[in-house]
Amino acid sequence: MPSQSVVAAAFALATVLGPLHVAHAQTRAATLVLTNGHIVTVDSARPEAQATAIVGDRIVAVGTNADIKPYIASSTRVIDLRGKLAVPGLTDGHGHFMNLGQSKLQLDLTKAHTWDDIVAMVAAAAQKAKPGEWIVGRGWHQAKWDRPPVPAVEGNPVHTSLSAVSLNNPVVLTHASGHAVFVNAKAMQLAGITKTTPNPSGGEIVHDAQGNATGLLRESAQRLIGPARARSDSARSPVERAAEARHVVELAGADALSKGITSFHDAGSNFETIDLFKKLAGEGKLPVRLYVMVRFESNARMDSLLDRYRMQGYGNGYLTVRSIKRQIDGALGSNGAWLLEPYADLPRSSGLALESVEELTRAAEIAMKHDFQVNTHAIGDRANREVLNVYEKLFKANPGKTDLRWRIEHAQHIHPTDGPRFKQLGVIASMQGIHAVSDGPWVPAKLGPERAKAESYLFRSLWDSGAIVTNGTDTPVEDVDPIPSFYGTVSRITREGKVFLPEQRLTRAEALQSYTLNNAYASFQEKELGSITPGKLADITVLSKDIMTIPEREIPTARVVYTIVGGKIKYRQGGN
Ligand SMILES: [Zn+2]
Image (cartoon, rainbow, N blue to C red; front, side, top):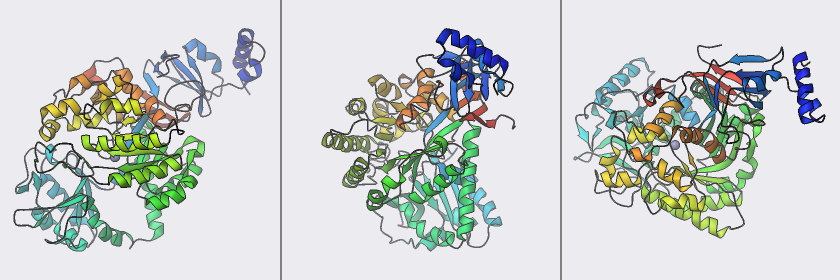
């Protein structure tokens, strides 16, 4: 039953709005009210507010403290924000959900200062591992080490020291970019990689001057170890594997929620993983909202199954599937990005095409047929151009299909003549602010300073052209934490404290929009998500510091106080 004050308020409202609104207003005792805050709504109709009322999983009102007071009944949970900042639930526009969870079960190599640190971590893990068990780590990056490894081939280590500390346990260490792995001798032996193993198409087995494999496997060569790992994996029972998959979802969700993420665009899962997400969504057990891109499936399977897997807001708005993920090139850090001109630091190479233009075209045709969005990873300027060409060709061939919102994931290095094509074609630039500042220190060496300046992480140029720019972290490539990515987007300050191409900075309001409403648009959910607007789902992030107004250098010190998804407090600083 609504309280007296709500009934009284309903009558008060009725005198203003007329009798039709009486019954409506009477039902509106809020379940949750946030009051006395600095609410930045990302809704141009009311950009700022003090308070908001939520009924169930929806926002019903936004306004001043006085406006919202009538919604407070005895049953209402009221949170006094004490001036804190509340923003629309932050969305990671590009990440890898299961990999994020799995990364919590692996050696975290992101903080290693040297290659020797990594060898020591593996040595410690090998002491504890069962015989034959795989030792898995991720996040190493040779550019982040204090000194280069010795010996080195093209700046990367050679496996001998790693192999010496793990003679009987295969080791696989994924590069921070996800575009290369480093393996030891045991892993190469199990995978059958020898001196004479040819490079797979779209990949490279790196060799030393004597022709021995160094242990570095670039791009598609990573897959050479897949069968050996799968053999070890299949030794476990289906029950064990299912339990682990659920655990991985929980780990990823807990990390995302603790960092204020309410929605997550998963840049690629196969149908089997989507089955798991659907099951969990049906049980109300998905921790955050997922927008899942279909990946790792053949064209034939997609053609026959896409319609069956299409979902829009399944499980109370927690699961949406209406896009596919493709990948045309690799990453810049591993010289795998596909460039128009050779690398400045590796003149023999212009990178690699991972997927042929013909294959991408065929996949895009299937997506078009089933009204699925196409989201293609493109880092290099050549890769971006080729993807724009494929999209343009298909758009022209299908003039009756509108509002397609196809995306380029990363859109990292774009030739000046291709920049305006994003807006012209309606292609979304799905970018990551954190990459600009993580990669900033070494991008000019890879591309040469002029090309870097003209082409790299063009947030401002794309935004001003009218293109939709989104934001995210590509986690676990980077931490899922949106604060450093927001800070990178507005400051362009790198780890070294230098400002990388400051002319490409976004304002804080733009960066917030890129992390909220634009991500909602990029997933066809802008009517439900992306702003604090009456009628939308009540996804709200509350921060300890007001990142919209505090001095810029203090932004990284902001922490999440509340993460609210669908009107439920899913994370609270310091626990519940
Ligand atoms: Zn990715």
